[in-house]
Length: 72
Image (tube, rainbow, N blue to C red; front, side):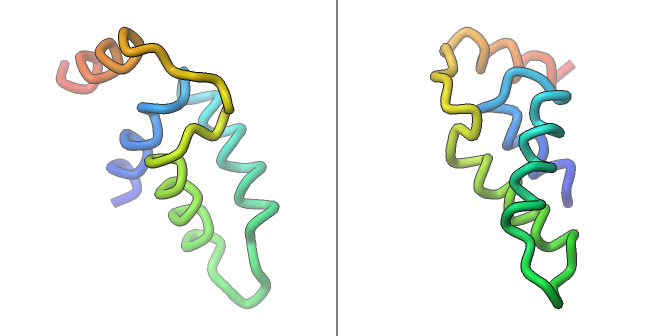
């Protein structure tokens, strides 16, 4: 499900707005003709799950706060 991909990607991005901006830019750059746009977006979110797309290091306290927010 895409919601799992989004929560995974939020470990490296500060907020959902920034994630949306970065994902839309990356999807436009990586999209190939004759493929589904949804598949390209899922690939981008999978990549964001393992890599930091913003290039800024994420502090450990931010990751803990986001995990607490998800559990609530």
